[in-house]
Image (tube, rainbow, N blue to C red; front, side, top):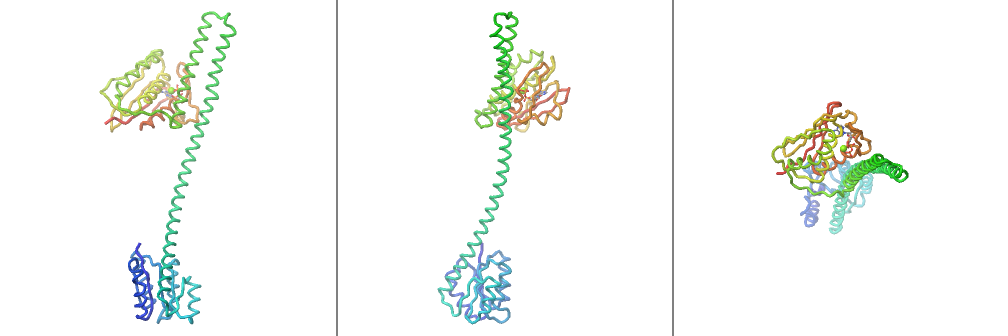
Length: 392
Ligand SMILES: Nc1ncnc2c1ncn2[C@@H]1O[C@H](COP(=O)(O)OP(=O)(O)OP(=O)(O)O)[C@@H](O)[C@H]1O
Ligand SMILES: [Mg+2]
């Protein structure tokens, strides 16, 4: 910032002396303006401010024709109370000094004739104190800005924390209910086997063992989802993005899912396209794909096909998984990705699930700069689309 000092005295010789004495010390950094009247001094002050100058110090004589020095300093004070005002005067002018002290917050008065060193020291002190004040002001503004930023960050963190808290609650409720139920079933089956072993016929034993198999399978999947999800929450999920061909990937995944589909006479239809290289973590996308096609199978009626379409546009590759099953009511759609809502429904053949699949899919896709959207009509079916960044 440019800075100026204004000196006012009706005697040219005094102005010369002021300029001569202040010049060598301040001229490098400050513009030194001189004038013989208070009226002109005010004009100079206004012009300086308008042209972007700071005026840390005004030095004025007391007795001048026209406006007096104390009056001038009061006017300057009204314009900016931070300007440091120095009055040059004889001891006799006690009224003027008192007036300037009371109404202009006079910084110092220097008796005439003054001592050169005293003048220079006083002006130097005044300038320093003005600049210090300015700096404090700027620092304060900066602090206010930082404070506002901090408040925003705190609000953001608070909402993240309450989300994390909901996540933790969900985690415990899954452990408390689903895991407890699963283990209770296993215990029941085991007790039956243990207590009635000799009385059980082969078909009863088979039914119990099948039950154990089913519950263990379900519990294992629950634990897998739970761990996958917990790892994502604490940022511990192994993440190894790489380029791979989505077409080959889908063909491979379908071969794994066909057994599950064939149990409901469901055909997985995929029109093989050209190669579609994407960049993503293969394992995560495999988990996403299996859950989404698994859902399509679970919520489709026997014999209905599930179609898989791949499209490439604008550096994205999108996969549609289309089923003609039960569909999802509008009011449930909004809740599907919320951890603290229970979203689980049974499949058309009473298949059970963990209710965590879609949430995990979303987390995995987010990690891979992908996204997921659902369109559904009750009774007609559901289309789930997920997109990934295409490889260069
Ligand atoms: N294709 C779909 N058709 C109809 N409803 C669906 C479909 N996909 C998901 N849903 C609904 O969304 C809920 C949540 O799905 P999500 O995959 O998260 O859990 P899940 O399938 O119940 O459990 P899991 O994935 O562990 O087997 C399902 O229970 C079901 O109500
Ligand atoms: Mg699922």
